[in-house]
Image 1: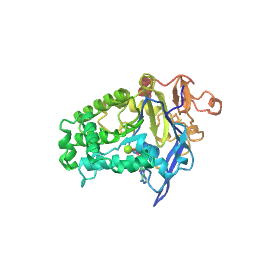
Image 2: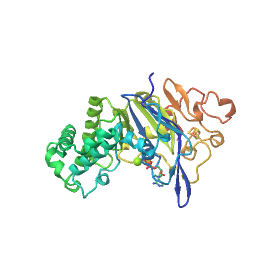
Image 3: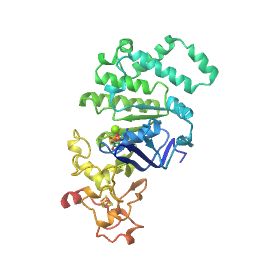
Image 4: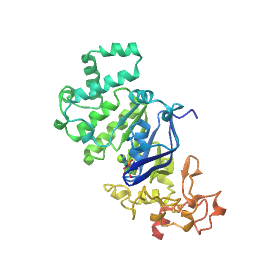
Length: 359
Ligand SMILES: Nc1ncnc2c1ncn2[C@@H]1O[C@H](COP(=O)(O)OP(=O)(O)O)[C@@H](O)[C@H]1O
Ligand code: SF4
Ligand SMILES: [Mg+2]
């Protein structure tokens, strides 16, 4: 297979807080092939947005990356000087932020916002002489490009929206403006951070359909962040399930639904009928404290299969089927000897029914 467009390996991230050092990401591995859509799912607070911001270089000043690499087209983004890093963000990557209500500045019109973004991108994506000439790029051509993008996201009156202030637009319309803005530079990688969450269900469905059409049409690579596994299945090729700053399971979307393995994934799938609730709510307990993480398996406090050994041996991810990885001792061929808890047979994934019977 060719080199992935994006490859994150063993990414750790800490944030300094008044109470101490919070360990937010604990070794994320994630890769996106050209033209692939991957979904990142997990409950609120597990580190999805921080992962996205790490890729975009939009981390708070209090964040540090003690170890890990983040490569885009083979180049380590974490090693790049700030300016070059920004250049990637300007041209090759676009992000739709989580909250359309706050992502737009209320004092600027949509037109001001979009043309400013294009001018900023221009300074990063072009050479000096191009940049100088871009300084003189007429506002008319920037306006034309913005309106063209507003049309692409199926805004019926793009000229009127171009002149509007955010407060004059509905949530769905603001989300379309943010999508249009993220796509202005025709990025190779689009990160969509829960683009429907703040919207009502009908608007969310329309936004999802729009994004799916745009992804197909533009053949972009996408990281789609959602707390809704059914949306992940609808939109993505590969699903990464995240728990407490780690990827606990990765599989092609269909495979994850047909053959879920990690007890957390199984719990999430079992709560699908009530997906209007935040993900994870159907599973008793809460995420561990980032200031005081449990040893080894982060899910041990909530897991119906937990054994003392789960806190003694780290459940490293292992491949249990082609392209399917899970980080759980229930599936430990090589560590089985070291693991003397009475767990299910190695290689026999706990069926969802089995889990239901036992809990
Ligand atoms: N700027 C910040 N300062 C301190 N903690 C933060 C900051 N941003 C995020 N966090 C913490 O990082 C963890 C992951 O947050 P986030 O990535 O926003 O989760 P998600 O997007 O999955 O809901 C949470 O515990 C959150 O409180
Ligand atoms: S390693 Fe143990 S506690 Fe963790 S998910 Fe697997 S069975 Fe549960
Ligand atoms: Mg988030």
